[in-house]
Length: 533
Image 1 (cartoon, rainbow, N blue to C red):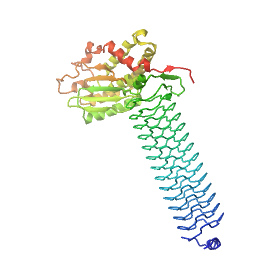
Image 2 (cartoon, rainbow, N blue to C red):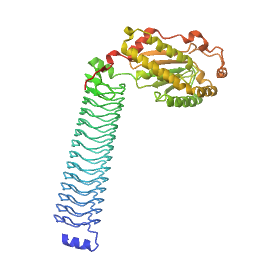
Image 3 (tube, rainbow, N blue to C red):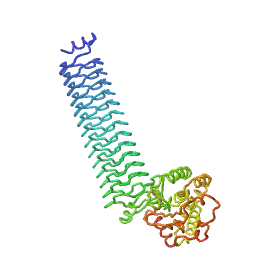
């Protein structure tokens, strides 16, 4: 069949031309929408500007064909051969190209939004400035492709191969790149904000100046990656490998990176405000200075020696442990969960439920906080549901007052100012929780004894130093009474030791308290205020 016969029959209403041989045919500008050319031979054919919308070209051979500016929207090209084809500015919107071979083809400025290219092979293809919004490229081979300035917002690229590809300045915001292979790719200044790169391989990639805000990079391999000046604010870097990665002046504000491997990484000038540095691997890490300012504007610079860098990047997550002299049960769990839920509404510093360990006689509640400054506030929130709370509050306030009474020469101006701020925040939290007092009494009345049990509260700062802020005198002693019913009476004045004057004045030694405070406001790891820009 020749071109003239095909056009004549198509005009007469014929649509089925399966297996037709049109090798090297000139079909420039023809209108053949919804035609069936499945299995057809169209190698080296000229289909420039042709209208093949919704056409069936499954398994068709279109090698070296000219399809520039052609309309292939909604067309079926599953398992088609399009190697070295010219598809410049072609419209392939919502087309089906499953398992198609499109190697070394030209798709510059092509429209592929919503197209399905699952398992297609596009090795070495030129996709510069192409639009692939929401396209499905799962399991595709895109090795050595050129996607410079392309748009792939919301595209699905799960387990795709993009080794040695040029993806510079490409928009991949919100894209799914889970388990993708991107080793040695060029992602310079690419937009990957909100992208899912979980478990992807990004070894030795160029991500300099890239936008990775809110991206999921958990368990991602970034060994040897160039992340100079990249923006990773709010990104998930949990258990990510950053071995020998260059993060010079990168923006890591509010990232989560527990378990990340920073062995041999470069972090000089990195912006790290709001980041907890615990659970990291940091052997051989290089960092001369950090920008700890909230806006990343170098107004708070921390200078580091190798020793100080190791200390800074190997902090321990501060914790509050409340030991309760009573075993935990389902009733205790329900009451305590309800109380902490209400406390969290008033005090947002209480962000997480406590870890719970239970022995035959005792319960251990552990609260983790993001920084040392939150320890005293969350400690009061943690103890608030218990009958011991009033005595613990007195101890806490007296401890802070004792510390603030030390001379400026002993504490230093900076620590003295920060202690005043912490004390003010603690007092504000106490006032805020007063509105829960009536509710607390109801819970105490309904409690079977757990909230009336004696307690012991210990703080642990990021340097692993501990401080007792409250220890009931009867804690650890076998209680003689078999029931706590008497404690449910607010007027009870029996052997409850909080009525003992001495129980309210036993504070930790001033030397221990000072050491705890000085360690958690360690002056050699405090940022320097500067006007440097």
